[in-house]
Length: 107
Image (cartoon, rainbow, N blue to C red; front, side, top):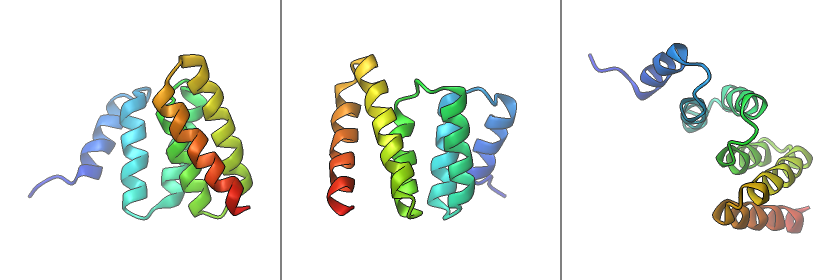
């Protein structure tokens, strides 16, 4: 019997709850499996524990958009843009700015 990706990630997470990459991967896996609530819990927990993890902002905001929480998504994009600027991560900055602009056009 093979272990599912989710089981593997949960085991890794339980061994190191402070590993930001594992937590991010776990959130993405829950999102892929359609469990938006658990994905949201892991994204927001990661954001609280490691607010400098710039990769989470785009995915958290997109999930919030999908959950029809546009105001919260906009706030997350703005926070992510600030983090990306601080880190001089121009790829993340461009991605977040584009997503924010697209959301603004939808509102």
